[in-house]
Length: 309
Image (tube, rainbow, N blue to C red; front, top):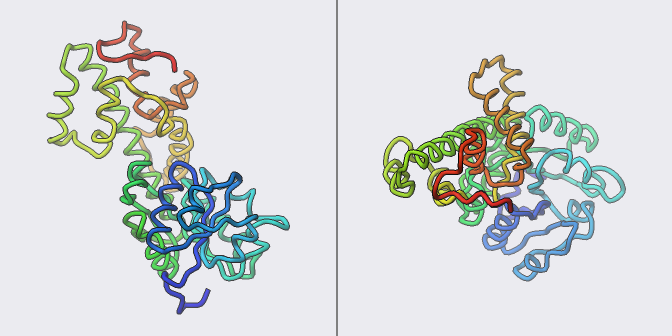
């Protein structure tokens, strides 16, 4: 990719049009007027609004200067890199934007391999996001970038229709930032779940409680997005709690590699392991209230209906 290529000139491709990727794709199409996609299943909804479907990852790479990958983790990307129909087979000068929540070490390793196998033609920026499906739909995601100054600057311009991209450091910095984000999110949703159940068992009006506390230091975007679910005890599937197990594992890897002695992280990992072991991993992260109710071993508090759905 030549240094004179601007974000407007970039032919953008995308892999990973799931719950997060689909609304991001819509924003990118609206802003750019075009987007190439590859998906295992046909996506006529995206084609109808301007996307162009590629038949294979190789075909996608051949017609792209940059490819955004919004897959769950690096192993999902690895499967698409090699072989006759893989991304590498079709890649010329290519900027690979990895939006997966992954290990910083893993991102650096895959970038080194791609650089070596492509003779330096393929470069990588990590760009995990925060804000959930709500943020993806609204185009207000926090986008955490790691990479060289030039590549990250181009990535920021490309991704700006989806939210606020910020360059935080060298390759892997985005994943470290996402690990920090997930540590805070996990701690917050656990506190919200426990506090909600405690208040419910004490006879408080939960809606009034969280409306009041939202205006103080207990307020947060997470409370705003999960308040109604916590009050009603509605943890129907949305942002799967099981993903936290993976994400907190990456945070633990970062803590170990930086010799950071965390006190809260081990407890959070154990709690989300408990959620998955209890068969609740597919529930929304607000399932922390349900887990608190189960652990107390007392009757369910008024206002929560934990039917097994």
